[in-house]
Amino acid sequence: MKQLTKYLAIGLATVFTAVASHAETNVQFALDWKFEGPSAPYFLAIDNGHFAAADMKVEISPGKGSLDAIPKVATGAFPFGFADINSLIKFLDQNPGAPVTAVMMVYDKPPFAVIGRKSKGVSGPGDLEGSVLGAPPPDGAWAQFPSFAKANNINIDKITVEPVGFPTREPMLAEGKVDSVTGFSFSSYLNLVRLGVPEDDISTILMADHGLMLYGNAVIVNTEFAKANPDMVKKFLIAVGAGWKDAIANPEAAAIALVKRNPAADAALEQRRLQLAIDANVLTDYVKANGMGGIDTARFASAIKQLSETYDYKTTPDAALYFTDAYLPSGGISLN
Image (cartoon, rainbow, N blue to C red; front, top):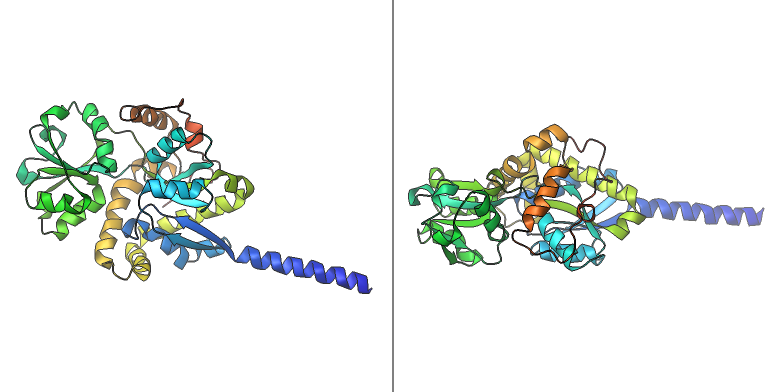
């Protein structure tokens, strides 16, 4: 009897430990950028209990770009991350066999854009020849500009490209020292507004609306972690989707959730930044029809091919290495 009691005690202790551990599973999520409007849905998912419902306690860390977030996940320091899938493709090409892949597309349209001033003669792609374009050399949008130019029959040699720094990019456009700049649509636009440029003078030329087939940012996962914890990955993605659904329904609440983590942020400005991302990058016609998270395989194949216009692959491209929908619900995640 004493022996049975002993085993029961051990068994109960094990169960309680497992339950406690299960209920308090700490999950690290690495963003690619600082805490701004477009990251608000992840904080809202925490505040609205979506991660807790999946028995997860999620800690979100800011980043310094996709090339910061991807290695964090590939090394296993973080199980989940958020990064530009084009940067992920290049990373996997340069690091064959690295245990990282994308599992949920968030930016169905990437925010790569040319932002111009109509008063400087830039309203559309056809206005760029003969103009002055400010472009930070490390800028993701500038990296895709050659493909955008090719798709729109733009002769880059007829554009005066002015290398600029990130801090001086929008100020130079606001001061009229350049006619347009490359950047992320939702960030550059609002930076110009904050600098006093009239909104009706700003033109946002989203590259995805003008021939660029590329996808944007996605949730990425360490593949070894995913293989060992498939159910956790599935629940994590559902919770992320729920956070986006809540943010779309109530962007003000999302901005409040963000400001709780970044008190220096302007709630109204970040709410607007979030709304710009929702309208242009997240809630696209494809996502409305097919749900959030998945990709169109034909478009992805075209995107991989188009990427070769600006990047020389070292290995044979393989779409299966870059993205899987194995952890998504059938039919994607509805945002309606």
